[in-house]
Length: 313
Image (cartoon, rainbow, N blue to C red):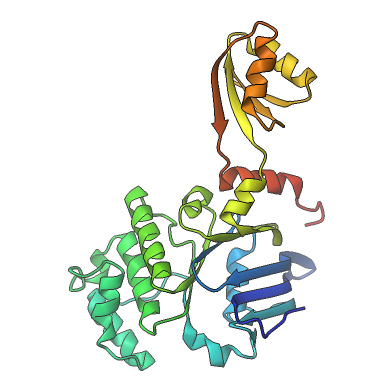
C-alpha cells in the first residue's frame, strides 16, 4: 500500500498493472510494478524495449488508465490528484508537435502564451538547454538533438519540479548523446528531479544517482547505482600460458570459471592474489590479473537472467 504522506518520494507506484485486450488475446504490459523515485537527482528507469517503461509513464501522467495498483506523485494519489500536481511536472514522452516553419523561439513563445507562462522565460529556457544562438533558426532545420532539446525547453517553461524523459537519446549520434547527458546533469544540479527512462544502460550509469531496473513489466531491482554495482559478483581476468589447465585447477578449487579467448574469467573470490598464488603453486605463472569492474549492463543481464519471462506471457 502507498503512504501518500511521504513527501520525500516524488513518484511512487505499488503493484501497478496494465493489461491490453484485443478480442480474446490479453497482453500484460506492466505486471505488479513497484517504483519509488526520491526527490532530487536523476533516477534511471531502465529496461529493454517493450519492458513497460513508456506504459508506466503514460499511466502516471493520466495518458493511459491502470488496470490495477496504486500511484502517487508528490505524495498525492493519481490520477485523482493530477489536476493539482500536473503543473509541477514536465514530460517528454512522445515526439512533440512544433510548427516546422517557425523558429525555435517562436514555437516556444506560442506554447508559453497557450500555457499562460510569462514569455520572458523563453530566452531563459533556450539558454538552459543550449539553444541560445540558434533560436531564430526554423525548427525544420534543427538536428534531432536540437529538436530534443527544444522539446525539453518547452517543458521547462513552467519551471517543473519533476521532469520525465522517455528515451531522450534515441536516434542521437555520440555527440548528441553527450550533449543530452550534460543537459540532464545540469537540470538535476539546478534542483529538478529527473526520471530518465532508457534502455542504454552504459549511458545512464554516467548520470543516474538511483535506478529501477524492470523486465517483463516487473521490478527486478532498485536502489542507488553504487549499491547495485556493489551487489554484483567480483570478476577477475587472468592471463596465463596454459588457460585450459588453469581453468581446470581453478574449477577444482571451487571458483566460477569462464573462458574468454586466451584468458580465464574467474568469479567467487575475495582477493585476486589468491588466484595467482594457487596457479603459481602448480607452476602456472600469471601474465595478467585485472579486475573487471561491474556496470549496469552486466548487472541488468544477470538480474534478467535470474528472472526470466513467464511462458504464459
